[in-house]
Image 1 (cartoon, rainbow, N blue to C red):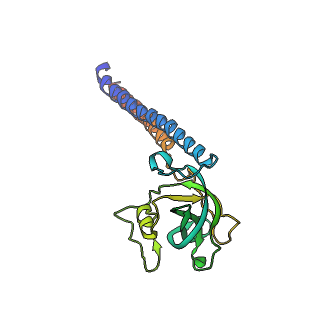
Image 2 (image 1 turned 90 degrees about the vertical axis):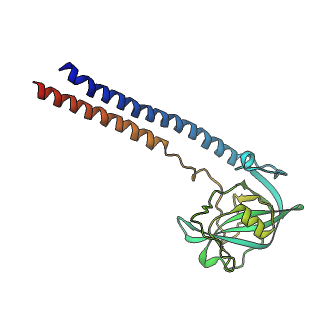
Image 3 (image 1 turned 120 degrees about the horizontal axis):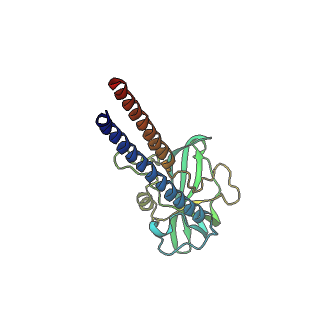
Length: 225
């Protein structure tokens, strides 16, 4: 009888060990991801600094910056949807600060309000640098330039279209409480972190595997009795 038990027991223990190791790996990934998100949150919330001369995504993404200037003619409307206010656009504006022209994401505008006049953006602004990762070359439609409707914040294309540096500052708030433009600041909420769910899934699978192994062993014993 003992020989008949060896194979299923080994099968059960090895399989459960593999599943547990996958759960432990996902637990380690959870700690790693939580650390990254904590660093990003700290960077977003830091006191703003002057706009770097040559910011890069690797070094400066989420950096809080403060700058003075004024919006220039020309803006881009990026189609999106707000959880509360429904369909609308992200408003991307040309902004001159000193001798530089960059892009500023002023926030969300409802579809029904996109053609209404808005106060000019000028003076001191505070926001965070961002290199959006929204463009899918396979599925994202090309912008409708005639209607000024874009389907993703494609930073290089937007900068080329508006004749600005490929630098995007997402405002933390609207200076002066500008109506009809809802601030949509940078947060870490969009960063995926599903490692806890993955870890729990692997551990539950390991438990189920051991349960099936125990049932298999019990059936063998019943047959041999």
